[in-house]
Image (cartoon, rainbow, N blue to C red; front, side, top):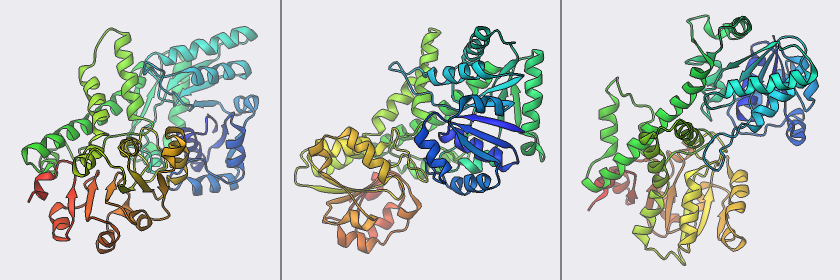
Length: 455
């Protein structure tokens, strides 16, 4: 099947490469010439395990191409996936300008029936706005209204996106019951048939319900994270081990273990903006989602907890003190720094007068770019980008762990102790067991595990 993917960001590139891997003829469009040049030159603009090999293999086979030619991209695919960004506006609402621009471009150039698929995360009612933009562009040309707009939200985890796409737990497709909508649904059923051979994974529904499903899923996961973080903060005060609590409640099949880990707060490109966008939709319909508002407030506060632990231990004035930070990306297996808790921590410690040495296995280049925008020249000069985890430790008062990379899980603790001025670790992801750390001679501060390190 001939497929066009509009947008070569995180969602678009993964979707295009995976559909090509299944034997489809895929053309990926992006208006960013530098990004297209990079992709055509064999580069990858994002870090995602397995994606580089997938793109290279399908480019070599001729099933995956990249272009800035809008007319050619519209002519190519019977199915046109819109996978462009929907960044938050000032009020938290999803900005649909890129989505609607893509729809207008399809309308300006299409001939013959097109299935237009919203792959971008869009609020309820966006499908109708996309259809209106298409109709407007077609009417300006006097062309027939021969299309159907579907919603097919993505459920990809950064760091495991290729695996999630190729082995989906569910495929959500929203369509209408018109003849064009039923025709489009039949085409999508054929496209996704390889995923449904063992058992049916596709959930068919109307467009608005599909749009809502994506936001509801992310809001629920964000709620679990904030709920557990709030309990962890209470656990520190009342003398409870939050890890024991997590195991105890996670064993209940009605609850489960996923997204119950206490930590430094959630970040990334999805949860923060999707929670905001769903809350904005609710306000538009004069309904206040109290739980969702609390989820966002708890997460904002949680990102400050790790820094507050450092300030509580070393004092509010950190002038003359130096700290090591391991982990900058918002989660492992990505270089994504969007809404990363490490950004909040860096700002807290810099504002308190500290100097820092930071390290991340993948996100160093992105961290340099982001921190250069957020810190003044004199402030940025107080941040050293280390060459390795051990290099970051030299002369530091303490180690602060923000991202749970596998490379940090089994370090040489004797070398860590020797490199630090004081054997103090602040663990924002609870990677280590407090008792074991105490036996190794460390002063250890986790999240919700303080009772285990009291003397």
